[in-house]
Image (cartoon, rainbow, N blue to C red; front, side, top):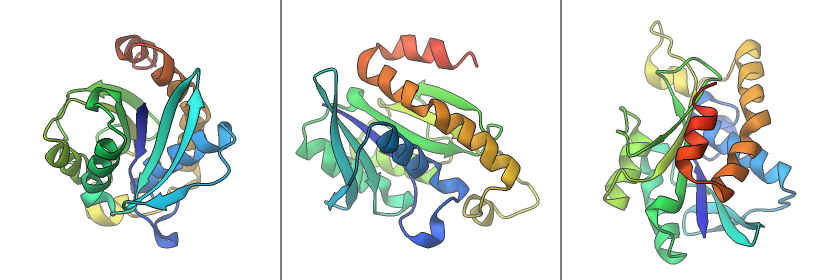
Length: 186
């Protein structure tokens, strides 16, 4: 079994904010794969689907961004998912809006959700899909990441979300080095 985790914050007030791009990605994967409903347990909203005879767990932690590792760890243990079979989708302030980068065994780069995942999994050896949200040096970082996308930014994010199901399918079927080579060139 593989697990794909989208990071974000639960609640209407956080919908369509920069920090919730991971939740947006999970929602798009669910939509593109006809997942009708998510269940709630163990501090997460999740769905399980099957791709080429392999079960895939989609997870949106409900622990809020900075405590994402709690839910990720619980689901990984409960479903006996190896850290090599986990892909975490998160926002990245250091990349231009709409750019993506796949990484393995990298640092959290100041992202508190990723730091918390590493603390709970006791490793940084999991896969990541980082989606750029840019940085606005004129605003406090917290206010910026919890702010809504502008129309121009939303178009760029929607372009990424249009390709997210291809990345998802490749994660389920191809070696990660192959996927990084394919998507990190763009």
